[in-house]
Amino acid sequence: KSCHYLREGTANCVDILLAILLPPLGVFFKYGCHAEFWICLLLTILGFIPGIIYAIYAITQENP
Image 1 (cartoon, rainbow, N blue to C red):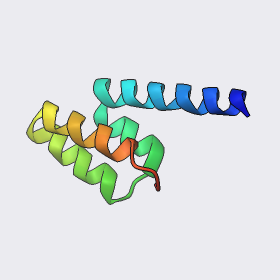
Image 2 (cartoon, rainbow, N blue to C red):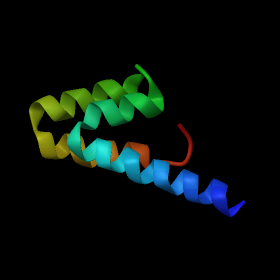
Image 3 (cartoon, helix red, strand yellow):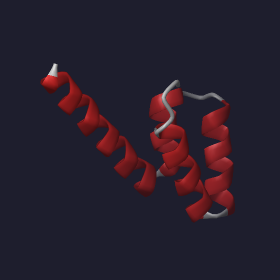
Image 4 (cartoon, helix red, strand yellow):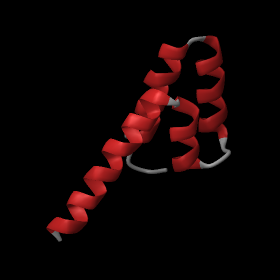
């Protein structure tokens, strides 16, 4: 059980790091090409910081 938790936590850290570097890509890996990805892409085009904030918010949500 602890290995599964560690692996899950590590994936979350990698996802968050990816969300900081390339926000739309991090959201795409979690949600695919759904509305969350397009919102993140639009926010990233309008301003990189809003894209990062939304990507971290979307990735840390419980239910994809």
